[in-house]
Length: 118
Figure 1 (cartoon, rainbow, N blue to C red):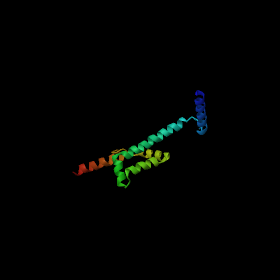
Figure 2: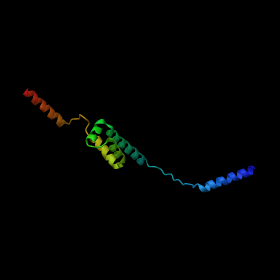
Figure 3: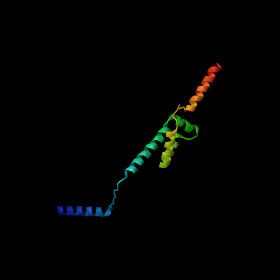
Figure 4: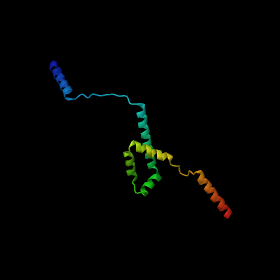
């Protein structure tokens, strides 16, 4: 009885081994530069998403006739190079309320003129 069960079990294991294909795998090392690049691209993509999540950016998108959800989908569809370019533009934009030296000089001149005329 035991022999018959063990033979049947062996037959089923052999049949299963022949029916289910074996898959070969290949392991390779991933260069550090590639991992760092992938991480940086993801960070830049998150930066663009965070910019689109701002209330003022969403108001501007709606004013231009673009749904904020559609803009987020388009960010997901951007290539890595486009994301890097767009994130670089976000970094180069002046912060709200930032004035250049020229702007400050003009404001001071206008203030002096107004003070003299009063």
